[in-house]
Length: 368
Figure 1 (spheres, rainbow, N blue to C red):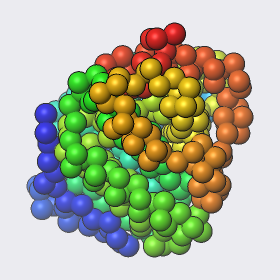
Figure 2: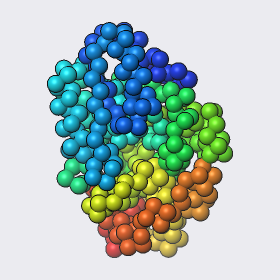
Figure 3: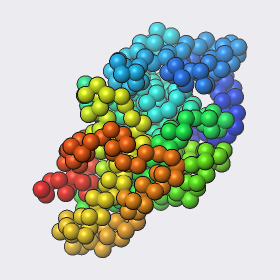
Figure 4: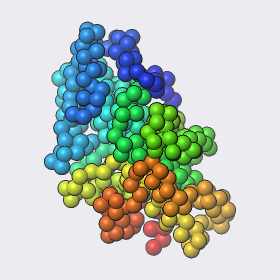
């Protein structure tokens, strides 16, 4: 399922000003904005005002947080938005926020059969323009096929003012590509998974841009934030091009999802997705380099050289933690409140989250 993107993409200062002309151009008269309390203040309110002034009927849905105070892409949030979209007879929904709000909007728009427009408020994830919606259904993380946005308006004035931890999280999500790209190549060689050199190279280039400019990203300069934003959106386009998320999501994402489900199950506050992914990437790097040294039987003879070459492209866990330090992000599971018991359990069980993915973590655990 190869997909391309023909919509509008604006990554610049004042990009928000382009949303209302876009709505008018496309003849949208009934529009819904989905946000949370914070993102509504940052961008939703001015969008509501401008669209209403232009004669467009706008309904705003502020997603309610859960008992812990987190906005979650779960059944309650989906039903809240789907009901509002139906009641407002919305022709399009505008997602104003970061990853979770995009996932809620993406699936809800898909469910009611309308398009959605992306207005990111923080460069925190690469999922703005993906088609899969990672949702929490009955406490389990499931990625459900939905739709990508028909347009993206990434306003650099807003993104540069995003909280520091969200910018560090975006960098962490990009860093995760080191292990996701390895798992994808491994899965194609050993597990017969479909593979695209072009999509892998596209993702690698976006990742390298972030690593090359990590100092600027760490200083939150306008150029650093723009480089990070473009890289995150480019990674999303790579997934869109391939039609699946292999290029951007491997074992490091499975650990992250496992931790998220455990926090929900035990009633604890959520942690930024990219913060978990960056740390999980370093954990997986440590494990994979150890397996290369001690368990080479995991790598079939005919593919061993190719796999070892790919493994060497993954920086050591410590090198990855140094990069996370440079952007001011957390570096260890303990920083996130993930204790040793949960870490070890996730390393044994997280591959079950996406049982159709042929990762080295899965092969290692199935051989135990």
